[in-house]
Image (cartoon, rainbow, N blue to C red; front, side, top):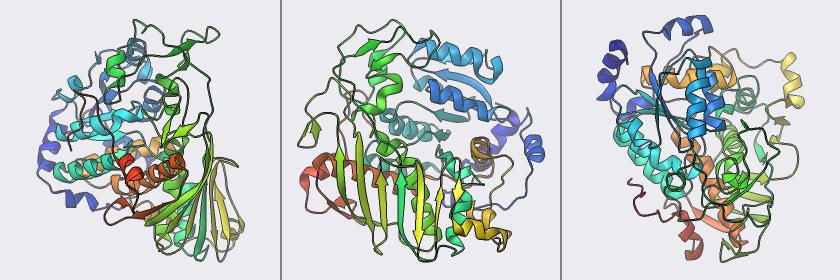
Length: 462
């Protein structure tokens, strides 16, 4: 860590969390931004979770930071990251099995968390308490209660947290769609539909001896004690991130102890964009109820899968949430992946490849105000595009001590709805939500799923 960065960090440590709500207007170009991120100014980053997501997404941060430490419970992932990230420029990075080793490193300025979902809240909270700014993959939480803890610690510590919902940095697609809604081109939005895909079954997966390259106890972490399950796939290349059917690594999203399935994976993206558009249009994003239909690959009883030796998150669903002003937000597993915004004046569809609809076509004759995109992006610099811009936004905000584009509060609004939709699906009944008290109305059984128990030694202290 450079003397310059250390000085900047100390200068801002005493600032209040209120300062994090400020924004900075800038017309930075990629060239000027690159100059400000010179070798003497680059923060030192610790990567926690070096699997496919962590490894691949780090390439967008190249030139903006120095990778000095890598933690992963899989020795193959750890070694691959150290040897290959940044084209081998991180070969001097230290490798660890326990993430706490990184949090104890004084030279680490920022942390990137790319572990499975069930670890996010614990590591994020401890990283903030250790004085680190954090870029954390979505979703931040496995339960609504974890979000309360994160909000509390973020406010207490004043750390900068960027959520990995990088669609908020797709200026030409999602940001533009939100700007269209914010400029009144859709009229009053009556319905937003987030189509996110579903899951699938696996059949029984037998218990397997834990391979020597994996620390299974550390992989489980806060999750309940469980045996390692695996059906190896010999057809996969040796360096493939996939290892076959398992309750570990790339298929963790098919198990409720580690994830909320597609609902919280893609839902974290498209429900977020839907709610962002509602707020931009001056409408409510306060949820009052949610219900619908869902199918699971195994039978459920009292909200829990009756078979725990195979994939069991929802395979298909259509859930509808009502906002306090009557607007509907539909979360679908079937259909074209993306967000459909329907208003009294028109409708648009936006995905990672398209932005279509009559209001979009009309822009050629009646363009948005020149500052519409900038205002939607909080007036923050946009030196790059998409994933790379999301990383640039994070590092800019850590230097300036301001709120990033994917902030904790907006993310929790979206992911809490996803959690509620999952709870409704698991019990196959509609729920009423008291947003002020953050409780499900008159349903003790459903309220029990707002939090989870942690394995001894892995508790989360809020």
